[in-house]
Length: 478
Image (cartoon, rainbow, N blue to C red; front, side):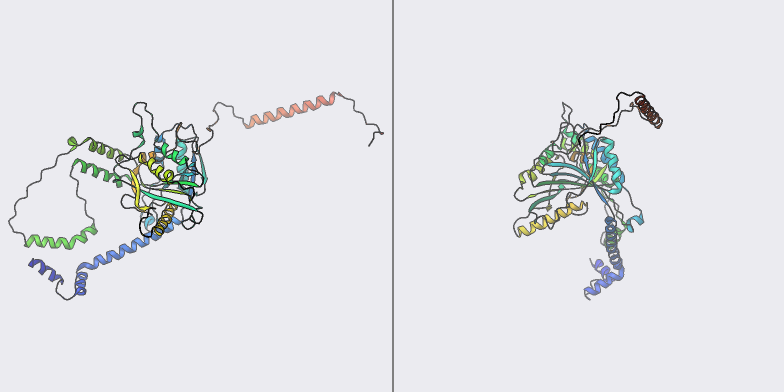
């Protein structure tokens, strides 16, 4: 201990001259590095936020209403391929694009809206990515209709929905566990004998179709593509933890090493002077064998599910839900309980629930004021469709793969879904290729034939006089 105090005294600390002297001693002995790092880091954060705000202000968004034929026979597998297609907009910016242009990865918003029981599928996309979305949809649903519409939330602002006589309940959803654990997906809804899939969205569509006058339900799934290696490493680490396989120690960054330098120096001094020269040889730790053979059925299922999820493309995801209605028409049993009851069926190794920090729930003190504040906040976040606004901690923002997304958001297929879902009235198809096609030469021949026929008719009429043409008498009464 005395040697440790001598080391601190050499730095000028603990001399009893006051806290300012101690601070100056730390600063001149290398502490200035941390102060400079803090200032540079803060300036960089402010700069990048400002540049990204400018970049975001230049993005033009479009809202695409998608209608598929009612006799559509495509399963959710088709929508899974759509997500695989639109993932292709992912891009790693170069230095200039990130720090000067303010580029950040943009994404999409998958939305399902019910206005008084009328249901519409909507995808919000950047205008420059519109062709990608349309191509992906038409590739799987050639007879679909895609129409650009206005933002259906434009009439509801955080400051005026109360004045219009509406009440609002909203929440951001969070996952129950880490996002390496998957939710129940559509293959698990397949009947083992009949080999038919029970549509996981049927219950949600039925609830949305039951809304009456003055009621609206909005479901938003904001997504953006992420590189596979950024989240699949977590899946591999979770599997190793279950199996008891030792994991490699994470390599510390240069900044972490600089921060740990003073503590490491003190530790080395203690090792050199306080520990006896005679040290016993440490027993080598036996390598822990894999627990795969000793896993319970539930643990074995979890390992397989985690590994299966990590084999598919992933999207960073944030889910919001709003039920807004006239105060006299609000029915929370349908608009709130019905929605979460429908979403409960996706629960398996993972699931969803309202986030306590991002839902319109207020109890005890100042209940009315706090509730109104939360209502305004969730409505503002919903209208922004942002993956950054809202709560990101505590699994408020998570990664879902394309199979999970297709289970949560897909178009109804034949025999499934209420009649209130907006669909294409009749199937559109191209003309058969065997039909004859009129050419320019054929058109000239037809015009010549008609002209010749008309000339012959005039000649025949002039040669044949069927009626005697007489001048009327002059004494007719007028």
